[in-house]
Image (tube, rainbow, N blue to C red; front, side, top):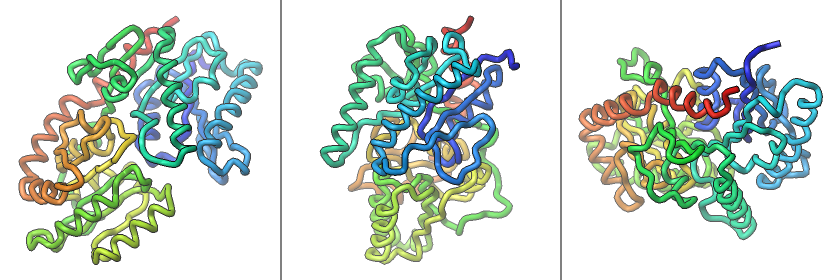
Length: 379
């Protein structure tokens, strides 16, 4: 029987690890070994989960994602109650970490609850049903954050501002901003993500990369359109655009493929698919530039910070947590102009971004801040 306290993660996504939220959980597990970590996630058929991970399947007739998430909460609550009754976990001692406040209804029996926000999750366009779902998620956060017995950690200022904390700034990163409220930005392993000479590039030469899973909120159609304009300049005719990420939305992927054909850049836009975590430093160091143009639902992007830590310059949109990181900002109308300017000055810009990121967004600061936040639950 381990004498370590359980830190129970509740998350819709963790394994396989192919996105920012999943990497965040993995980093917590690796940097907080004083806890026994246990991840409860939305299950996927046919996956063998690690020993510390429990994938819970929802009924197959729940094919609408929002309904799946509500069903997931019900199943979590039932499964956790079983584990409590079996003596596997202790609701009076163990800490529950909800990756988003949406999961609070599943953990009502627990005394020690911490809510982690990976960015505002209730914005963006959609159908009437989707807007109702988003509004419900907003209300959950708004009601929960007024309960001062709950602890909250947000990785971006935008989250707190959306919930009424207007007077908060980057100067308060890594600190407690209110009773049981912390602002801890995403941070990265600066030893793993560093600048080095690539002996064998796994990318074509002159590659611009978009390290994002393929979903509409990532704004990839805007990047492709801007890239097609960039390619008309003589300096950039031999450049390629590489989209690195899993296809979460097949319809959107097909739309992007049709767009590349329509714009005449089909041979220059490569859909790389998911990349292994261990390959990402090589990919960033092999790239000329990284573009992250999320339209909504974005915190302090791990991929953006990883790229900058490698000295590869980053352009982003100016939304959510992206406003707060030292990327070069662009909008839809001027993105192709900004891309050209950054490529022409990429060494200087890359060095400036790298110095800021490695000094500010490192795991040492992140780990210390998390340990300070978790002291509230010390017994």
